Length: 309
Length: 97
Image (cartoon, rainbow over all chains, first blue to last red; front, side, top):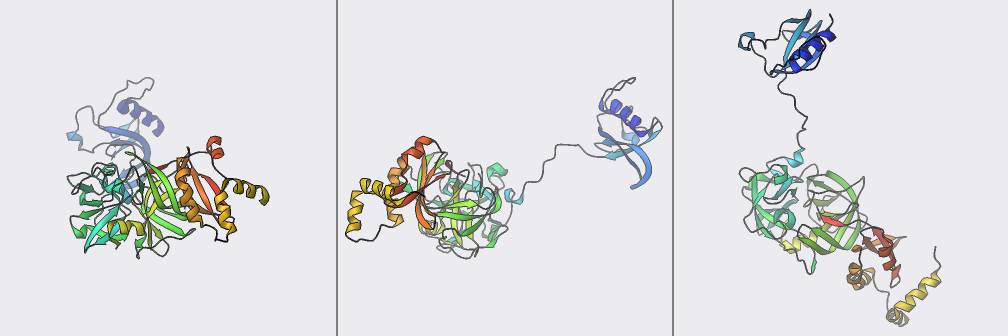
């Protein structure tokens, strides 16, 4: 009898698949059956064997009567392999969505009540260093109060208030539903200064801030679409933006178009828009299917009385 | 290319005050000023989600971002404002990310 037939017998007896002339049964420890080289003391041999994958490999004396897998099935050797339990493949989330200390620009972050946004960069104000992102990321669209916990990673990426609190909400520029807004920004104070770094993930250090020129090439590092490149297509835009709490008008914004496909997506809010000389030129906060909108970094610095580190 | 003549006639009809400015030799208004004067009205036009400044054929232009290319929205928008060309861009709606 060949290995193929022996395998069919195993499938019937251990996994409960139908086979003519045999009664189907199941073995709770068996998770799979296959065909491969028989392994002896860790070395594969020429002999083909029926592979029986088990959750846990035990000494035959410890296995319940009737659940022991024989050395041979229909004249074909068996080879028992410990496989653990098979499950659907869940890839490790990208580093952008994991807990990282020191935390840096580009990583997932958020007020404890929101889903997740992006940590922009560090800013200095009156000698202290703060984390910069959007109001709607750190202050939950005006609903946050001073001292609220800020999680890294954000709640949507598994951040928990018991173990992932990085900072406390400090100051936000309120969003105005009536008049024109210029910035959507907020700062949070890290509990431990060593838990944050002025780097931007996969880009490096910032070199100050300035305004972007029309058609200038820019890049950003953000939680969802990671590092992307684009060009500034408008440096004086007035845009109506939809939020969870309503729609707000923003003036003096920059508009960016991605170089290859989308420049940003949900969760990238708060990312710093950087020119190719590493100057911070914008703070990403909104987008349409074709464009990304950012506050001018110079306006953000003015509104918060802070400077990019 | 559209001939210059018809568009001038349109501008002359709708923007009498501006023509007077020209006739007494004042410099032409900057695109920023033109945008500021018209953006509140443009933003109230149904379907318009943004007003900005772009570049078209080497010249600055007023850019109007619209939610979709519905004929009603397009028909409600001018082709130029105070001699500055208007470019319509279908951006889709803007949302906080």
